[in-house]
Length: 276
Image (cartoon, rainbow, N blue to C red; front, side, top):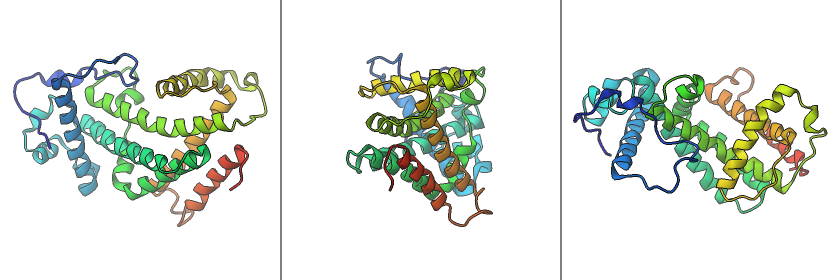
């Protein structure tokens, strides 16, 4: 594992803006060795923080504790993070990227059927999250500053957390979008029937996922806003149920929440014309 080197530098460097998380401005320029080294160090800090969360819980995360785990001084860490929030940002990025990689690997083992892939991704999301309950509960409860406060000054650690969250969301969104493309469903009304505020909110989101689809090499018809709303609704239902289960918020109601989760997937299957 690489170690942050406490040599020179301005502690305020952690407040600089990281790479464009949407990739639109990155072009084809290869990162310099300095940039690569910095990304490796940020990953090391995230891993060390995550280990503390798993072993002793989020309250154990301090600059001193992470520095001790990395074998450096706490002031050295301020070259890379802006305090405890930055540490948790990097820990979240570590967890989320590992989860996204697990979802992709599982998806790619399921063949080419869009429904099987979509359902498989959702099930693996739940399985992996419950198998890593400690770090997932910390991750689900933590919000990168740039998401929770758009006016906040961007930081490299915050950018890492935001980029990771977008990567994870896209794995699910891509599966649902490709399912719609293969088996379009009728939402029963035109876009004009949606409330004006909902249309305004969904428009940028649809543009975002379509841009990501193009970047991923997909040639797809743009879904109506009504279909976009349904896809987003399923993503929030799946994420919400898994989050509640990870936090133990369903324990008072049922000892096994899997049937409730599977009922959502049954609804999704029926929506595209296939009962399981």
